[in-house]
Length: 151
Image (cartoon, rainbow, N blue to C red):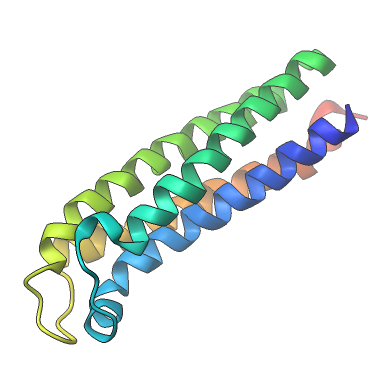
């Protein structure tokens, strides 16, 4: 059972790291693409990190967390709040994918050093702030669960 918990924590760490990295990657893409041109949008680093790193680790974290939940049978109030935070992370994951899809056409015609359109920049910064807030809230809930249970 301990190995399953370790797998859940490691997958969650990688998923959250990728979620934090992806908006920054999209926001800095004009400078990066000017220095290193890519053959097509299908080979973009943003898509690669999203589809090959973030999504598999998200699925692994959710499956391992579900198995830990079923194994322990925990139904404490902090867990319900934590699962709500995980739903928020899943929504942010989907929004990051949408940000990548919306940013790719905008990145093609940009000249060297020209910034992203304002709506995409604000979306990226807002999404980054939401991810940081949710990750911090989930981390606080997990680390303070003894206080919430009254032990």
